[in-house]
Length: 241
Image (cartoon, rainbow, N blue to C red):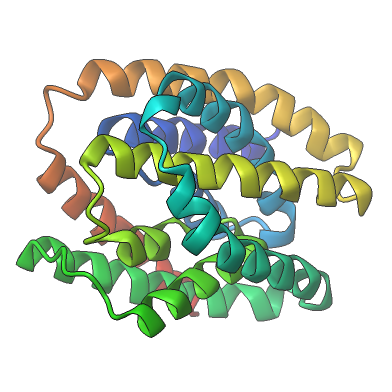
């Protein structure tokens, strides 16, 4: 096993532990930290495929909380359009172009979440702003598989209870990442090396979820999110170089 794959395994373990503790972050953490030494076009298909069984399992468990009407009428049309645009654009961009743009994006999203944590901000955005954020979240998902932070901000103040908000966003990732996986397979983006890496990393995601579930009630979520945002902020700054 190469040191690169071992390092990626440790990042995936950390990312999925974070997902179980705080309810967010598995893909954005994996892509951001791994992009410090691995090409984003190589990482992205792996994290998309890893997220599908995880999201599917949780959506099945929490299916009664999913607001399908909100998904159909407001969220999915814009998210699917944005994701399709990002998926079509991604092959035209090199890692040299994707990396600094992603770094700037992560710096911006980290600062946004730090501001929201500081001010406990859950206000509902105006409809045009929310629509732009949903479209942008889909675009980021298609390019980097990291649309979660912007989707969470767009859906803040939606009126959904915490369980409904989490389940509804998980349904978004299940639908989008399933579609992206099919698209990437059709585009022959899963080389034997990527398939092997994805298969090896899947048990690591399960281990991370087990560890995170055990830590969930022992760690203050607010402070944990603060630490994660700071980690992502500094990693994003490093990607700008």
